[in-house]
Structures are given as C-alpha cells and as structure tokens.
Image (cartoon, rainbow, N blue to C red; front, side, top):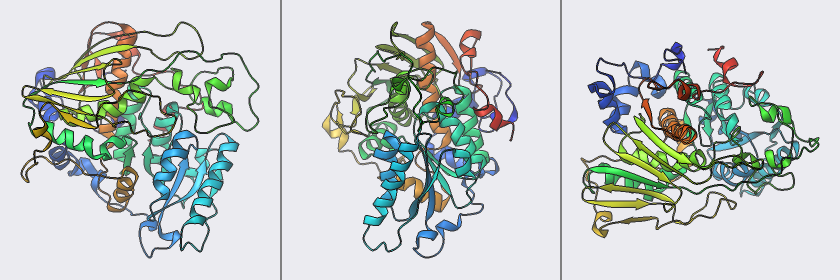
Length: 490
C-alpha cells in the first residue's frame, strides 16, 4: 500500500503529530467514545456526513407507495432472500422497487417473492411491479431508487458501495465491508465525502445483549479491561474443482468481477437448485477470506465496541493457521490470532474458544454471544455460550447512569438504517467503524498467511518495516471491474 495515498484516501484520518503511535493525538483517537468522536469529528465541516443535503422525495409526503424510501436490492441469494429483503419488507416506511442479480433464475425468484410479499400485506390495494436488472449499473441509473441493499458475494462489496455512493444512493451492505485494506479505506472515505447514509450488516449491534455487554465494559463494571477473547467457527475443506458448462442463466464473467479468470464449477459459485444453502464462494480466498472475516467481522466489531477502539486498529499482530492443501476450497482451517492495541488491550481470536466475545478485566469478566440464534437457517453449527453472562451476576444487574456512556440503541438493524435515511443521522455502524472492524480481521488474515509478528500503524494504515505484508494490503483487479476505475471518477 502506498504510504502516501491520494487525497481521497485520507479524508477520515487524523493529522499525525510528531512522536509516532504513542503521540497524544493518536491516543486520543484510540480512546474516544463513539459519542464524543461523533461530536468532535463528524459534526464539523469535515463531517458533512451528518448534514442533510437533499432528502429523497420518497421520505416526504403521505403514506403512499411512491412516497416511501425506494430500495434497490442487489444480490438475491441466501443472505438477500433470508435476511435483507425480509428485514426491509416488514417496514412500511420503505419499498423494494427493484432487484438485481447476475443469475436470472434468482432474479425472477426475487421479483416474485417481493411482489408476493406486498400483495399479501393487509390494506395494500396497489401491487408493486418490481423492476429487474441483470447489471447493477443500470439499477444505479434509475432515478427512482433512493437507496441500495447489497447482499452479494464479498468480492463485490466494495465496488458496489463505492458505485452506489457515487450515484447518490444511500447504502446498506452485508459484512465484511471489503476484501482488502485499500478497498475498505476507499469505501469509508468516499461514503462520507458523498454524504451517504450507511449501514453494514453487523446486526449484533442491534441485538440488546451485545449493546448491554459493551456499555457495562465501557463504564468500568469489570474494572480495567485487559483481554478480549473471541471464538469463531471454521469452514470445511473440499469442493469439486472439475470444470462444468456455465449455466445459461448466469453471467459468470461478471460474477467473477475483479478476480482472476477461473473455470466455472458450481462449487465455486452458488447452488443452482437452491437459494438457502451455503455457497461455495464462501470457502475460496478469491471471493472470501474465510471465517476470520465471515464471522470475525461480527465479533471483532463487538470487541471494538466494548474496547472503545471503533476508530483505530491493532498495533501488533501474530498468528498461526492451517490451510487446505487439496480441493477447491482454500480458506483457512483452525487458527489462533493475538492482536495488541495501543490502549493496552490484547484481542485473542481462536476457533477453540466458545463462539462469542469474552471481555476480561481486573475485576471480572463478561461473555456475550448470539445464544444459539442464526442469521440464516444454513449458518454453520457452532457451540454458543449463553447470550449474556458474567463472573458475578450482579454485574449484569448494574444500571448505566444518566451521566455514564450510553451507546447507540437499535432494536432492529434494517429499521435503524431506514430511520437514518429519514433523519440523515448516523446509523448504529458508521463507514469508518465498519472499515476498522473489517480491517482488523484482514490484518489477522495477513498475519495468518505470513506466520510472523507484524507491526501495524493504524493512523497511516501501513505495516512498519515489512514490504511483503504491505503488498498484501491490496490486490490486482481484472478489468473492467474493481474499485480502481471508480476512483478515477472522484
């Protein structure tokens, strides 16, 4: 990564003062609470993200279909069908008016699904004819679309978010934010520069036990925090690499996007005869880095929320991992990561830990997890602990006082985004927070690949004295896809 990137990559970074990572400005950014950060950084001229410009016509007027927030759904597979479309459909303040997918079978299924859902709603006399698009660029040119929900494979996330921001759309995107550190930095900077409302699918922030756990930790109920332990599952190896004919309903070249040309096989993309099953691309590094970003971006995000490090990253990392030697699927297997932060906290991520986040302090611990809840039916089986527990039950009964830190409260992740569109105020997860949680996971993946201790500058976002590691901060992009061509437009 270029240590002196162009201006568009520097919009969000604090000025670096003499003294390196230990300087006071860097430390203040590391320790600022989310509320204080928003007041000091986002409310000013550089934080025009909070300032309303032109509110979409869809949020004004009577409660008519044409006066609701007009949503374009991009990606109509497992997550889009089982989570994001249902999450939007249940709220009357928005309307899904367009769907987009590179697989025409999934596209037509999504159209029928959305139209059927609206037809079943009581009192809905006017059925909505949902538009279909096989190319996201055509959807973005539709002036009736106010916002997009991105539920594609992960190697498309950054490009779609940047394209959406440049087209003036508000954005919901599934996690992780990006495949590389360079992509994540560009996304955060451009979304803010274009004053777009943003939400990422880190729905744990909108689940009460995670917010309660983080508020208790941030308000000192377990004393000085020193360790965060995160447990994640692993994906299996395998996959059939034998080449198959490309289905006529799939635009395979565009599906590959900016990644290298590869022969088609169903285990590389998604099942042709089902939507709910986990797709093969989740297990191939060209399209997903594995569970370290797949689940890690959820749990590391909560770790950062509880640590008060939502706007920074680790300063030192060390990791080990096993990688498959056979088969198509090549994401990591068992692994162990240790990351140290400037505030003295160590984050440890290990597949042998119970699935969840454990905060350990001088006076006790708090553990939080989903408690067995699944985002989709095909989520991998994993041993969860209790949804919320502590070394002393009295910790959980502690009341957060009016003068203590209260984190953003959201009980419905998609609704939180829709309200944010209407108010032009930040949703529970800002672009920079999404970038920092994803980037910490990517840093862990790089450490797993290199198998040695790495030092990271979270202000400049470069590895210190390690050219090989810095070369892994971005990837070559196959034309005409990728973020590079979009950045030229800025």
